[in-house]
Length: 337
Image 1 (cartoon, helix red, strand yellow):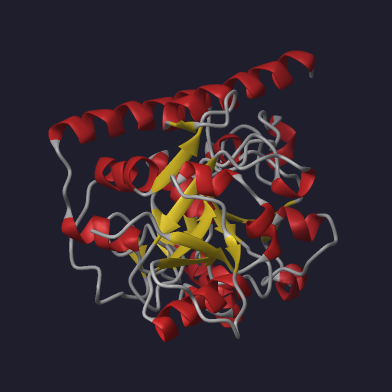
Image 2 (spheres, one colour; image 1 turned 180 degrees about the horizontal axis):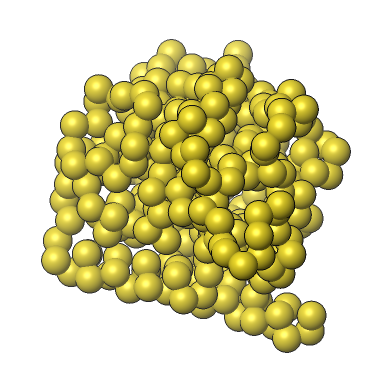
């Protein structure tokens, strides 16, 4: 039996971050370099499909040692990482990474294998109930209440129109390319939403980074098109989704949020939650052969795939530790606002 492996971090940020080695029960990492040989019983660690992840994967393959790719989990924190909020969940994948549909991932394998005990499904039901009750998403700083005027239109105020949501993403987002989509898919998606829902209003949700002027959106060129309504506020996903009957996405996480709220979701790419019989898929993934229930998807994505950090102690924790911590933060912000 092999001893505990020596982790090699293929980015300086991972090298100086002491959280993930403790969470995984590993010792202090060594710095990994593309030109350096890995020692025997090494573990090459990198970040998803970023440069560090690609380097870790190449090094592991070259020297015949295992690799581990990291990403933030689906319940990350109250605030944004760019604003300094610490990630409270971490995905660890020794196969691929969940948003890369060009190859398997540990999450995909978990869903294909289907080892869901009655106890796990009961736990997943508790997870889903808490997500809905507390309005939890990956990030949780979006505005919580939508005044009626924010989604008003030329339609008579005497009746509430049927609304369809199309979710834009930032141009160049890696999840688009690895999710088997491209910029053209967004135009196709928008036209499909209009054609398939002739009696409804079509609204486009712009990505927060686009609203902030930091990036461009894949649907920027559609601003000239008549009959489209544009959402220019960074609403919390649950607060926004409440007002829509159907959601169109390429690979956006918001499609997952919509599924958790029992909204019909149409996918023009292959995000991790597509291909299991829960979504209307316009692109197939032949590896995904199983049909899964929503609770099985919740069990895999929230209970089996990620690891959690207990927010007060920084020790290994559970989904419920993080969920209750984020819910308290949301309540406090709501109180002061």
